[in-house]
Length: 250
Length: 100
Image (cartoon, rainbow over all chains, first blue to last red; front, side):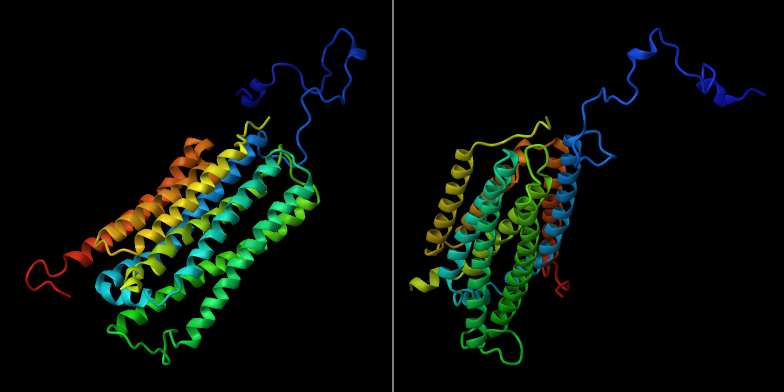
């Protein structure tokens, strides 16, 4: 029986390589280019590492799409069951606050995009932190407006439950609308709060000068999350605030 | 080295402007009773805005084909979920005796 392993070793083992001039070889010199300190050993290069992280984030965002999708489906089913009730209920939401919050989130997406761009272009840490802080301020402003709106709903007995009062023609549809309103905007607000937490960590990392054009994946991936939360609001705003808006003009 | 794409600042401002215009458009249109077209305009504007954010702010425009497939799969599954569920709810009662 031949030793199969031996085929892979054409020469004798434990024998120094045969070279003409041993002094010409410097054993510990790095011939290949030095790799980035942030490169994990299981990736070939920084580009592959970034690609893997981005793809992973997108897979997570797909699960988030389906997570919110369930609520959007509930909205679709119940609005189809009682379209007039939904329009009547929607008419009592404050379109101005909703529109202001839409603009606030769009601006925050712009500042977020600039935060990523600042890291991509190796901008000074101060600039990177500046964009991240601006994004956080806008995110907090959004939540502040949400607090005002929720407080108003509690004050006017528009929170579904035993104290729900509706003087319109469709109390059942209106209560269902406000249940969905609180679930959808509530889940969205939770995502905003999580986003603020992420931005705090990213801001600290950026302040320590950890991001540059070679390594900016955490900013990029957090940006994806922030933009996704913005997209959810882009759909929530018209579907919740605007479906009964034309009644306000009559 | 990593071959990433840095988009010019002007592009971000252009996308931002389009998003603002879309928001104003959707609010203005909602003031008028256009029947079914209210929903059509509202959802078209919202989908366009979402697409702009995904393509430019989220850099999918410059991402790998694999990212394209994964990103669009979420919306495909969402449409299947909506489609199949509404096919049930909207067709109830079409055949006598099948309601509820």
